[in-house]
Amino acid sequence: MKFLTYTEQRDTNQKFGFKIQNHIINVNLAAKWVNEDQNDNTFLSIPGDLKSALAEWDKFFPLLQELEKTISNGNLNSLVQNESELVILPPIPDPPAFRDFYAFEQHVRAARKLRGLEMHPDWFKLPIFYFSNPNCCYGHGAAISYPSNTDELDFELEFSVIIANGGSDIKSKEADKVIGGYTILNDWSSRDLQRQEMPLSLGPAKGKDFASSFGPYMVTPDELEDAWDDDHKLHLRMTCHVNGKLISDGNTNDLYHSFGDMIERASMNTKLLPGEYIGSGTVGTGCILELRPENTGGWIQKGDLVTLEVERLGILENKIV
Image (cartoon, rainbow, N blue to C red; front, side, top):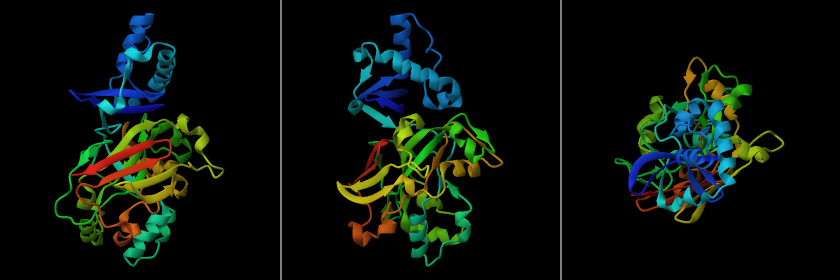
């Protein structure tokens, strides 16, 4: 299933929906419709937001699947909403936390080479991450303000899992139980600020503290069962276009550290909460820093339209203003 969080143009209250065919269905209105039309109150217990549903995902995901089947057999006209008329928010607009990993080898090699560094041997042993800002999450179609004190704005083409159920000290082989779904991630970056801060060894700090885009949907793992290759890696093309021009072209199967390994590392000695984002890090070729601005037409500027697409996960597009 594909879940989303959205508001309507004239109503700022957040709503929990899912996509069926080419339509958006409000989960709670669908549950009420089934209750009234079929005298079946089974679905009225489903929460009004995705994060609350993820807190008891083992209970609510089967109900949501059954709700989808139930309304598919009915008249959808009274339930459907036109996606183009909605304001699409991040799947989880207010995550408890956002950890972003550094798990694509090609990107790591390129980034370290630019700083005159060889690959660190421990990178191959340890999935590493930094904490990003969970309070500046943007959805598909949102305008991103150009940050102050920078002349080198960059995108980062990534994808992310969203935690379901939660837990601590989760082993890699058990991690599937806490993956609610996948979404596209753009980890916006200010490269000149980052360059000032990184030598001080506390991570990117203000260089990545102003905006992260997620969306448009949380796509559940069952939607992607046929997308795994013979090496047990998810095989989805990832691209970025800037103003319609193809800039980046990668694939999820280049991920060196699996999300299972990332979740095991992230949950060690602490509890992951439902609704947290676990980012993959940048795919190879997935940013201007790696490709170099002289080869891409320069850094991102005001007015630019940046479009990330991950096969079967959707399109995540933002304009810089």
